Structures are given as structure tokens and as C-alpha cells.
Amino acid sequence: MSVWNGHFACTCYHPMFLFNQFGDLERCTLRPGNVHSADGWRDMLAPVVARYRGKVLRLYFRADAAFAMPGIYEYLEAEGIKYAIRIPTNQVLQGRIGYLLTRPVGRPPSHVRRFHASFTYQAGSWTKPRRVVAKVERHPGELVPRVGFIVTNLSRPAERVVAFYNQRGTSEQWIKEGKGAIKWTRLSCRTFAANAVRLQLHALAYNLGNFLRTLATPEPIKEWSLTSLREKLIKIGAKLISHGRYVAFQMAEVAVTRACSPRSCG
Image (tube, rainbow, N blue to C red; front, side, top):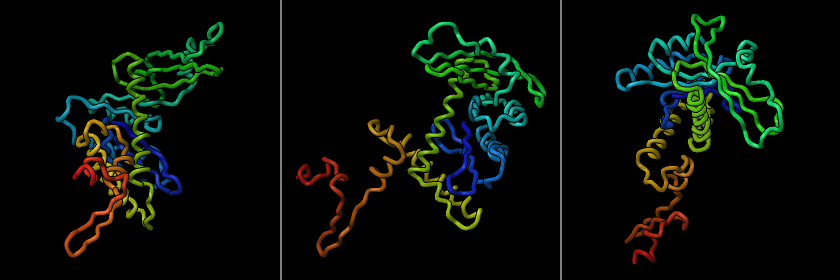
């Protein structure tokens, strides 16, 4: 499961989404625009965890630095959920990987170089030490390396922990699809409650489209976006004309396949 949170453009709302690894929207909620990014995380996550409890062997959770909170770590650990959550950098963390931040001697190569480290760390607000994985990237033409830290209870190697966390970025694509195909940013009702209900209706439409894409579409079009499915499969403009002896179904030329064209039908 991956959590995404962000502001809808031109609104005063702050939505939060919870996806599974297949792109299905497990749960979403609409919040006022002045709340913390992780506000209401327990009400969002707990019902989903309860629904899966006893039905799957193991649950995994990943989220961005907005969810780097001791209460979330403790909840996930108590539920036996493996997690990878990005945490903000600080001088202590930087000091633990100082040997990776020293600029190498010689001409830098033309490709990106990545280095990983794993160590135990305990912040002042934590009740116990936890594993932290660091990733350092040196890009050609950049003097300062890109550094990121992830707190996790996974036991896999540091490179695999980073690879697991990086898959969280696919939720950004699902959000983009929801904006483009479902138009779930159109929350123009007058009251907050009405817009919250409208977001749930958008979420239902998104899941129906994603179910169609992942479970029912044939192999040649299984990678289509929701926008392509909507424009080429679902939302096809047509005109129905009824006459005394027959009914004409008029469609655009691009919407008529070769198998259904008049020439191929006789």
C-alpha cells in the first residue's frame, strides 16, 4: 500500500489517498486545506488493515516524509506490517554517512553513481532504535550529491529497501490518471460534506475503470491509461436515429473497427 497526500489546485482541500500495489484505491478522504499532511492517518489506515487481517500473509506499507511520525511506526510494528517511510535529513544522519558524502578524487564518470548504507538510529522522539537506510546519488554535472533516508523494519538489503520505496512513485501516476480521466479535482459544490461525497463518487469511478483495465481488458490494451480506455472504449460519441422500418446507429469513422465496417460485413 502506498499513501499519497497533496493539495488539489485551485481548491482549499487537502485529500489523502491509500492505494494498493495494483493501483486500486483502497480508501480516500477529503480534509480541509489547513491540516497537517498526515492528519487522520489512523482513520484512513486502520479500516484497511482490519479488512486484510487474517486474509493475507503479510502487509507492506510505504509513505513519504509527511508520515515520518513515531505513532505511525509504533502502529505498523504492533500490527506486524513491514514499512519503508522516508524521513527528513538532519546533521546526525548526515554524519553517519559522512564517508559517502566526500567527493571522489578524479574525473567523475558520465553516468549516475549510487551508494547505499544501513545503520541503526534513534531520534529524540522515538522510544527505541530503528533501522535507517541511506541512498546517495551523484549525478554528472552536479557538485552536491542527492541524499535520502528511509526508516524501515524490513530486513532485506539496503538496495532492495530503496527499490521497494521507490515504487511509491507509481501512486503519483495513479493520481494523475484520476485527475485526467475521472476529473476528481472538480469539487465545485458549496459545502465541504458535498465535496467529500463527490470525491467518493470519483473514487468509485476510478476503481471501476482500474478493475476494467487490470481484470477484463485483453492483452493488447492492458497497458492503456484510464484516459485511453475512456476515450476509445467507453466514451464513444454516437447518434441513434429511429426510422419507421429501421434504427440507425451513427458513429465516427475512427470508432468503427474493421470487423464491424460495412465492407467487411458484406
